[in-house]
Image (cartoon, rainbow, N blue to C red; front, top):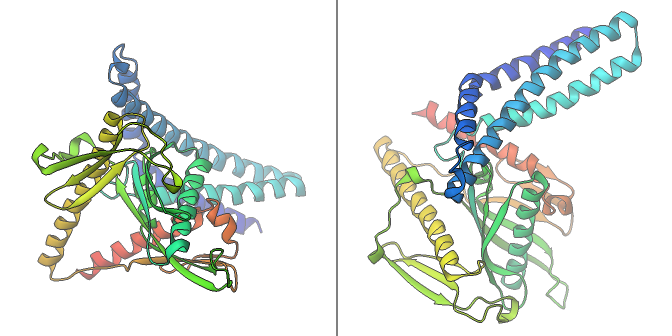
Length: 372
């Protein structure tokens, strides 16, 4: 038993050392010191948006450092606790050490997943768009269920969100919705959720109580940074204004404050109606448009690289099924992770699916690299 405990503790220590190496703790401390100096500048809040980004980045890095230092301390402490239990032959202390090792394993595993987010835009905040697809009213209702699921997931983790646009369906649910998750690494984390989600249930909108299959699409984009240089000439944008509306077409705004922005060369259309003024809606719509164009550019660059390699790659589009009838199950079609409790998943309990998705994506990338 003692040998087993020691080997588990050694494994945890090795994993944490790998995490410390990936995070480059000395560089992390240097960046924190630099950001702390910048945050002390008297004119910091003259530019509110830049100040918020700086303080958010500082808070996130400080949290990362505290988390790793705390785990290192806990590993050292649990080793001492186990030795004490052995010396005194104390079963209660031994059980306490066992519980702590289990807790450490879970926490270190979660942190290890974060270190797998090494893509070019993974550290960015995220823009998430959910759209109803095939399935009529049920698809619109399902899209609204997914919107609530992701907002609940963010709320559980304390991540700030901002809803930019909601297009309501006529009878129930939504046609589409776009929101931001304002947390570092939100894009890298949520990007594995992109794809088509499928719902199977007895339709609450069918008076004959028949089973219905419906679909909703999830798109995840990185928020554009000042370093991205996504400049859009004014003559390439058409801006239309209209009145914001709520469910059933009920007017929620008596002025033309909502904004629809069309990028003429690509035909990409975005809209924003959740802010109070036309200026705010225009700024939010431009942010979403820039993010979409950034991804278009990224895909074009990847397509060029795939063409040079003489190959293409696709991981498939349909990624998760939510079955509420005739049995209860949520299953990821890529990782095969599943849950027999759809209600908790739809209430935001997504971490097991997201973590498995991140590991699966990393494995796919490694296999693709080895195949070249």
